[in-house]
Length: 290
Image (cartoon, rainbow, N blue to C red):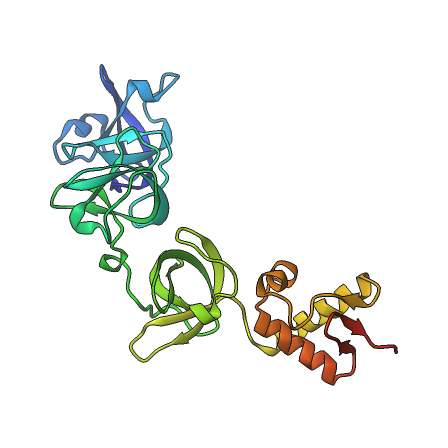
C-alpha cells in the first residue's frame, strides 16, 4: 500500500526513460507483475536523484499528487504530511483559494471553503493537511474543526499536552492539543504572552460535560507548589538572602525569572511567609535569620 501525503519506504522495481518505478515493500510478486494496472507503483523522476538507483534498492520518499491528481514521489521532505497540523507561510491568494509553502515545488492549496478567514500572503497560519478523494489531491485547511474535534476520549485531566495556538477569541486562546484535538486556554490562565502559531506546553485542567477541553500552562498540585517555594529559597540564597522580586512585581518579570504566573508566585511567597522563612517588604523579599 502506498500512503499518499506521507513518507513511504518503497523499493525500486523498474527504470524508465522518465524515472524509476517504486512499489511497496510488502508486494511479493514477480517483477513482470509491476506493469499490471492493479499493482500500486509511483514514479520518482530522474531529476530527483543524483546517483543511479538499482532495482530492489529501498528508499524513503514522500508521495504527493500533481495538479492533475497523478502520483509522484520526491526525496524532498515536506514541511507537513497528511494528517498533521503545522505552521505554514502563505505565498499567494486568489478568489478560489490560497497557496502555502510546504517545501515542495508545487505549493499547497487551501480552497476558499476550507479557510477560517481570508488569507493574507506573507503571513503564517496553522494548517491541517488532508487528502481529498474527490479531487485526488493533497489539500490544506485552516478551518481546523473540520478535522479536529473539541474533545478527545484519550485525554484526561492533569495530563501533559503540547499546545499549538491557532486563534484568539474573547475567552482566550484556541489551541491544537497533540495535533489531535482542540482546546482552550482562558485569558486568566495565559500568564505569559501567546500568539497564533506559537507552541507551548500545557496541562489539561478540565474536561467539561460537553467534552470541551480547558488547558492551563502550569500545574497547581502540591508537588509543583513545593518546587516553586524551594526555587524561591534557592534564589534568595544565591543572591545574599534578598530579592527585589516581590508580590507587587510585574507578571512579566516574575515569569521571566521563575516561569510561573504572578498568582502562583504570590501564593508561594505567602506560604513561605507563614513558615517564617522569609519576610516581605514593599521593596524586597528577604530570608529570615535562622
